[in-house]
Amino acid sequence: MHLFWSQGFEATSISDLIRTMGITPPSLYAAFGDKRQLFRACIERYLGGGGATTIVRSIAQAVTARDAAHDLLIAAAVGDTGDSTPPGCLLASSIVSSSADAADMREELAIIRRKIEAALQARIQRDIDEGILPRDSDAEALAAHVFAVVQGMSTLAKDGADRDKLLRIVRSAMMCWPRA
Image (cartoon, rainbow, N blue to C red; front, side, top):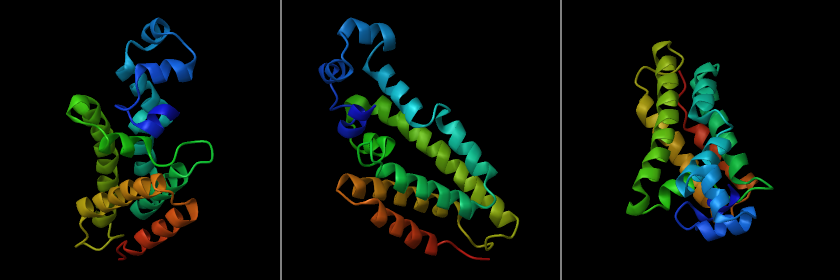
């Protein structure tokens, strides 16, 4: 997983994988089928084993949409600057760094991101409907804003930004959150 995370899906070769994993090509193919299937298994592990479902559920169960957005941003800031992981977000980096040859993988990752963003948008809309957020709040734009910040923090982490800087960005982003 760390190899895909640091190099991206396309830049990671089968040779890189077998060397890092200490296995032979037939073992890799027997266990995973191909590089795409191994990458999918890595994404599943990266997302905590429950795929987007776990994240979507936590968003839906958050006390408020603001809490959900804050939790997502904090998780991104911490995850992007982990002590034992490459900098940045595996999903964000892989979406940005893939070419037309990997369009199918990019689309799979985009679907995951869109599911999570849609869950946040729905949670925001619920707060608008319940009067927690102002009626003129734009749920779609707020959710997209959160994901733009997530994507940006991943890029900054890859460029060397530390956790403190990303957490300050989270605080700044949350200052834009509408109040009822």
